[in-house]
Length: 67
Image 1 (cartoon, rainbow, N blue to C red):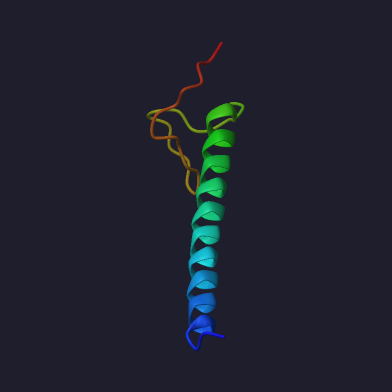
Image 2: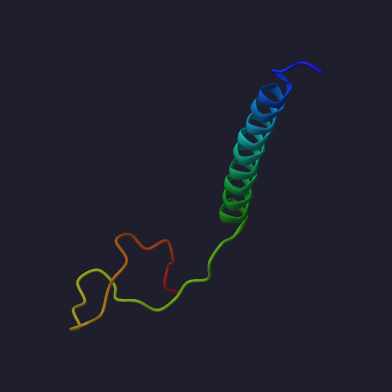
């Protein structure tokens, strides 16, 4: 038995773990990007440009048009 075999096995396992973590993070980011690209949130009521109400927020640029 080679005296360097445990070290070789540990290095191989560490490399496999790093590759696995990188693949997992890449897959999670791809999933988040795919979901964000496919979803279209519904328009919600918010303040329009020029409206002021204490404690209320307005969209910086609204994509919803009033019908």
